[in-house]
Length: 572
Image (tube, rainbow, N blue to C red):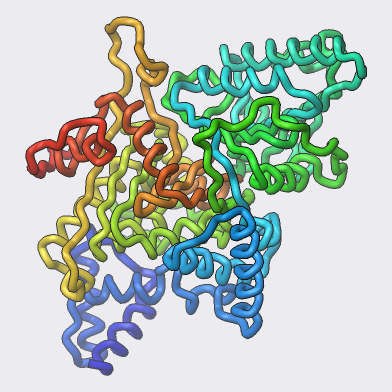
């Protein structure tokens, strides 16, 4: 057996540059046949493919990533960090389960072993914090902006606002009006102190990105140009100390993060841009130490060398709701990368030649945590994303299914289609990746392939739903989300107790090139409430591709349990 394994691994390493996906069956058979002749041992295509991925492509394999190899000091550093974090949680009557400790320890071990501050932005210890979620809003981009604008208009001393896309829209008008109101209130203040406002964005048009400076300091927009950007002129904002900056890096390194910090004590974490699209969006409002982590991140990215001296956080104008709870929380940033290992190519499938294996994703807090959480998931994973083309994420989902983990995915057809083609060099779309995931699930259930035969547990259930959007002819919506024509929400929930929210999509751009910000909240109640509100906002406007009818709604108590039937729809 050892000889067979050695032969397979060796042959897999030799052919890894020619690694093929399951649809390249003939080529894979040929490679397996050649390997069998070389080693004089029968090697099946399934064995070759599985070992090639397991031993040369697995993004969590420390042997593939020199920076991820354990160092002698790693365990001691992680122990110290974990002890301090557990002590801080204990002082707030909070704790972690053994399962949560395992995930966080693995997460920290990878980051500490990499020892790369440019990937973590903040020291790993500063990523471990706490938060108190005070509100969770699901609606459209406009309703999300109105929620944030109401807080901006009532700010006492500071507003730090960051978004990705900045476009002419009702959302931009709402934000502009909030700034006018804020200025009027500041001028009426007896103290006469100006309110500090900093606005950062990354993209406003194709021309802006094409001719934008690639300096990390970005471009500061003069007050005389604010009106052309849809903002009030400086003469209307005399009560504000305001500046506007944009940062973008060619070719694809957009700053995709979206957040707003008001008075240093309240964090708004939306999925929405300042744009015109009527998409399903969410906005999470958080207070507590997590705000400090985001403020430090803002200083690193947007202030740069000109660190802004902010007043200490003002007292919260409204106490948190009595039902609010504080949870262990991890800040998960993902700094931009100027297109690492991007491999533009022709449609190689048409040439009967496999594309090269996908490069490892950067070892950022976002990527590292999501992969660790997926690898440690035991019961179920809920994934809500506009698109899904990240190969490391898809492989981790397939592995979770093989371990018996149920996977529910809510995504969209044809959303940001051109962006998907550009950022994957035309090699992947969400629909294509979903078809591949369904095929992998069918292979697992049929017991085909090495992985399937080695499993000793029942296979997980796969559910995929496409959001179909609002009807063209209907009465006025009863819920703001009913206007949404596509879903732009980004959320992952692991084992119904760990919730990740933020700006990261499940696509290649969010895993390789774009800057992102996310939080991981450890709490069953928050996970339950988040999934319930997201599924409720879908309003049944989904197309079931594969999965148990009604399971998406029944799992959160928004619909009566259906008859247990499984259906696979015709693939479009």
